[in-house]
Length: 481
Image (cartoon, rainbow, N blue to C red):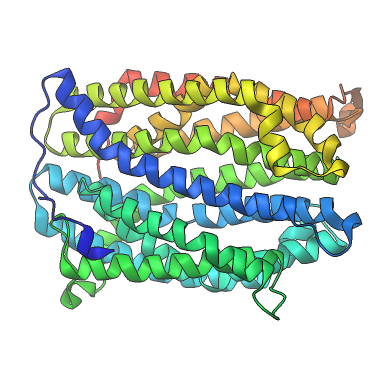
């Protein structure tokens, strides 16, 4: 993979004074990430397809099988989001140093981010292996579905350190303005994952395979190879960043500066993940049919989410670099341009969700005993189609603010969105009755899974407004990194 990647200079960005120049630069950054995210989505959908089209030996356990995958996917996403402790600070600081023309300091930051990745990867892996069963049971799973979910997640946790190293290297290169390397590496990871997951899931020859855990092991092994690839590329030098053994000496000052940016962002991401798991526990309580429908809808909805992430990545890089070069107006203009493009693509995805929702569900849930899954899932996928403009605000402006090092306000918005809006509304809209303790009880609306997604819909629109106003206000320009 390394030989196919050409060298890119790591110099301060030139001013972009014309709209077509801005658009070209945004697409140069966003296109590799967009393709990379498309590959990742395809792998996730393929994994979902395997579980939906190849039921376990006991057909009565099929929905438990798929429900376990939904829970495992949520927890796997939560585990991977812990990498924000490394990646946000790396991208923000490297982009500022490149913008200021200090290539040597950018390279030092990259080395410290990899050291942090190793430390946090080992910590997450060890803690996760000891606690994962308790977490799955806390969410409401037991019996067969709990055992399946735990076995799935154990495969990811054992090799998690390699994925953390992979992400730290890619985040540093993104800060240097190179999104192509991440595309090649993660694209390779996605392509390798498909045959590996299939073989480990279904078996080969006389070997019967591992079942559901094999899907996760295929993913973990593919990311391990991705980590080896990214380290090889950095050892050769890329975008002004190059591995040097002498720079792996820990620097407490740089680590402190990285964590000052990353800790608020990680608290934001991990608290959002914790709230997402809380939200999932409400869905699990509705039964395996509702959980399976929820999981399939979330997987398809990620087509919109991850396409927005491509423009969030471009916004993070361009805002950080232009602030480092003391060009606030360029930083602000480019942030808005990234939003315009990303929002347009996400709205297009929303129109696809609304039009093709039944077909999308039948692809993942084709069996006759899954018709109730389709009936529960199609309305919620169509509902979220109308949340795409708001979701684009949340995703893309989060990237822009993180590029500026402004990670505290997004944390506040997350807490308000989930703890004040989504979760209370979800209880009210999914329960017959709500016990308010000393205040007595009130009647709920018991709208089932659709009620839970209405709560999510309202949360996204209010948080989207918060993020839009924060970016428009411009006070993020004064954030110190």
